[in-house]
Structures are given as structure tokens and as C-alpha cells.
Amino acid sequence: MGNIQRLTLDGKNYVLLSEDDFEDLIDGLKADAIKARIAAGEETWPAELVYELFETDSRIRTFRKYRGMTASQLATAAGISQPYLSDIETGKKTGSVDVLKRIAIALKVDLVDLVASEQDDQA
Image 1 (tube, one colour):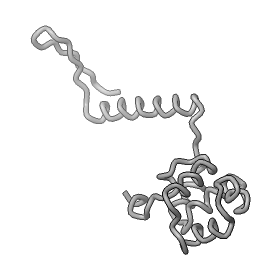
Image 2 (cartoon, one colour; image 1 turned 180 degrees about the vertical axis):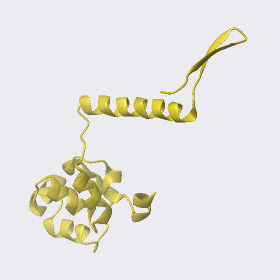
Image 3 (cartoon, one colour; image 1 turned 90 degrees about the vertical axis):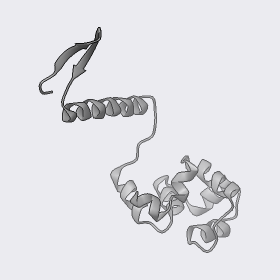
């Protein structure tokens, strides 16, 4: 950190630091919060998976393969037929919200991770 000044105004103590130092401080606090979530057991994904999610035409298939599941295993876990899952993965059918929730639970991901649009990816 650079030059830090301590000030007292109207009986209150303040610290004055540069905007760069302030942003570094905030970044450090955010990093500490992320490390705490990971230490508490929050799952992290490898960069390769994240990159593939940006490019895939089927997030469900990408997560299924990442989890090491066959289409049949995922369909059974979600309580749907394998052909129906295949139609969802290939985009022939969208799947109801209930079915997508069950797929998300079976894949141990949030529903939003399955249905994020290309526009969301670019934001």
C-alpha cells in the first residue's frame, strides 16, 4: 500500500488512501470471502469446464459428462426417460421447469447453471 493518511474531522478518525489502494483492499476482502466459501466446502470448477460451458450447445450434456454420468444414469436420477433427456440435450425439447430442476439436482448444480443464455455468458 502506498501513502496512507490519518485524519480527524469533527472528532471522528478517518483514513485517506488512494483509489488504487482502496480497490486492492476491496479485492483482498472479496478474495478472503471466496477462500472461506471454498474452505467451507463450496465446489469450484476447473477452468476447462468453465470455458466449455461458454461454448457448448448443451450445458446439461457438459455437466453430465463432467460428473461422469451416462445419459441413462442422469435420466434415471432425474426420473425421466433417456430419449426425453436426449431431446433436451440436443435442443429438440426445452423441458419443463420441474424436469430441469430435477436434472439440476441430479447434476448437483443450480438451475441457473443449466439455463444460462449466451447473452448471460457475455455479461
